[in-house]
Image (cartoon, rainbow over all chains, first blue to last red; front, side, top):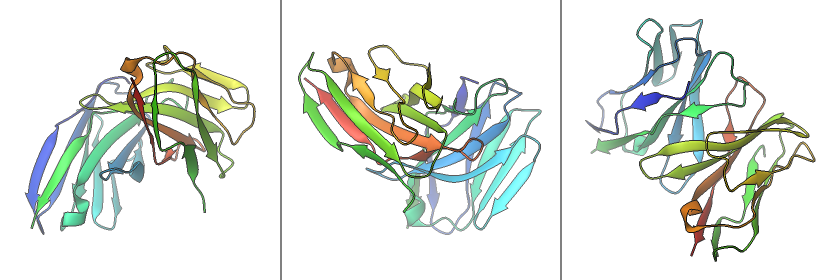
Length: 113
Length: 111
């Protein structure tokens, strides 16, 4: 559960869709999360998905989980300038306690007007 | 308002001078945790607690201590701070599977 990989940067135009990708090495991860961090702020939980699900949708956010490839993605529809932030993928591995949450290094999303 | 409160927000201190960063949550959460955030390294877990008097090491516990005497409080103690502990620190709490709620952060500089 210690190796959560994300690309560091993503730029999109306002109104387009953004897709932020994450790969994890622990195929038995049980819970996976997406957090958002705006400049100078703490982390805000956006959404999460359990390993027995393939997809979860919440308004403009869609999370896709491919357990075979150990790949998690966050799609933001109709991206706005207010979506510019760092997005972190995080996981709790099977066998870990629920307090043991591993984070990726974050993807800096920049939205151009 | 449900929240995690950590203090201070900013702190500059000198090497070797003991300090404590306080953390309190009002959500009756069992789990609490401390993370540090450094450029290019993301968030790394320092310590976490599953309940009162139950704590465990995270990925980078060296140079830090914690205690959980009450459910709502989880202070982070640096007995002898060093410059490599200059970082942005976050406290967080959780009920379990729903993910952590984070505080606003404490920016610590050790000179």
